[in-house]
Structure formats: C-alpha cells, structure tokens
Length: 195
Image (tube, rainbow, N blue to C red; front, side, top):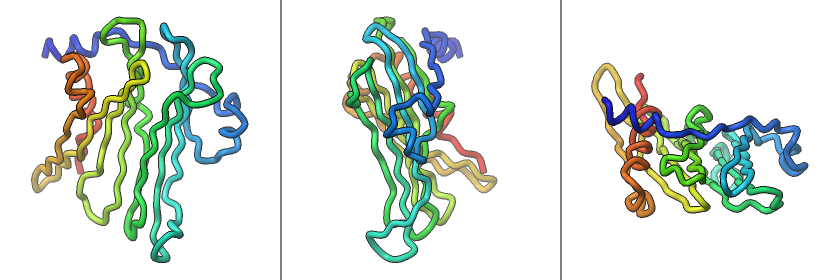
C-alpha cells in the first residue's frame, strides 16, 4: 500500500479548463468539441482540445450501420498547428457503438520532476451487442513522445470476472518504473467495470 500511495503523491501540474468560446474559430464552430484544457510547464503553455462525434450514421457500408470517432489536438504556445494529435474510431457497427474520452482520468503530472509535464489521456471504444469489455487505451505524452497502454476492460458480474488485460507499448516499456506503476494504477481504476 505504501508503494502505491507514493506513486500518487508525486507532483501534479494544474490543469485549467479552457472555455470552448475561447478556442480558435474552427473549434468553436465544431459541435463535436466537448472539452479543452490548458497547462504550463518548462516548454510553455499547452492547450488540449477533445472532440467526440458520438454514434453517427456510417454511410460507407450497409444502411443502418453507425460509427463513432474521437480526436484530441495538442497545441504549444501560439503555434496555430497541432504538435500532436490522437485519433481513434469504431466504424461499420450494426450494434452499439461508442468512442469517448474519460474526462476525470485526464491529468498532468511531473513524475520525473524535470519540469516537463506528462499528460495522461484515457479513452474507450467499442462495437458490441453484449457485455464484453470495451477496448481501452491510456495515452501519455511527454515532450512530444507518445506512450501507450492498450487492452480491454475487466468486467465483473455476479456470475464471474471477465479479464481483458493490457499491454505496454515499446515506449512505455522503456519508461521509468514510477511511470509504468502510475499507468497500471490508472488502468486498474478506469479499466474495471462492475455490472
């Protein structure tokens, strides 16, 4: 217990809500924009804008199929072009389709205390007609370098537990143990669903 407590005692950086009305015109006109944050570190002022389409018609294939898309745009200082972007989706779905960010999981830390924030983003996607676990990803960026933890939710029902599990990508595998521990704790918190 002491080890896990020390992980979350590491320095956090303040995330400030950025009103959608203050975003560039291209975003204020986009009804899929759901949330935006801003923070500061040694590199300057960062802005992160989140967009979700929800379930919408997928006109590419069979009539009645739906799709869902999510995008996150990162801007640094006054640069009008994003320095990185996250895009994911589910398409051609004849049943329930979802793609969404978990807002309460978004945070900025400085686990290595180098003055540069690690920004943590969690989202889920699925096309399902049963209780199977949704795909989940934890994406962490630091200094423009992407780290990913990918897998599926653990579903707990009265009948039993269905464990999807997760796997670090190569960048996370090379990251420090505190960063991997932080990601694993975040996965346990947001990747477990009780039905």
